[in-house]
Image (cartoon, rainbow, N blue to C red; front, top):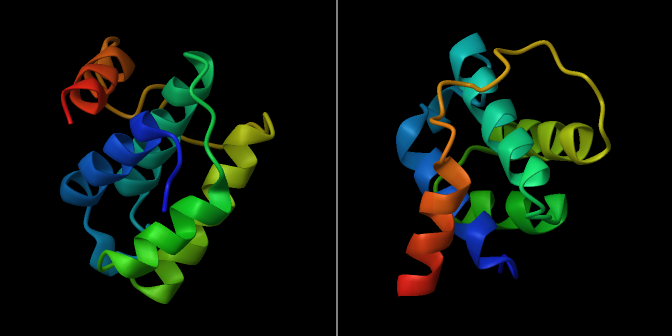
Length: 105
């Protein structure tokens, strides 16, 4: 279970936005993921990579995809620079929209 409700909303959105069957091997899916995690961290919404990986496993992600998701989550959370589109196609207000969704549940 993901304790941060905003991170949970982010994972639900990410799961429908990318092709989870490819295991984050496509560059656009990687950029989308990196961009979302960067936005969360920049807005002060922390997450636990292990929780994200476990949730991904339980929600249709492949083993490879969940592992890659974990690797990206750890890297972004740790401040590592990853080669990806800076915002991953997300609008500047994505975290606020995720917060609103989390509040409404």
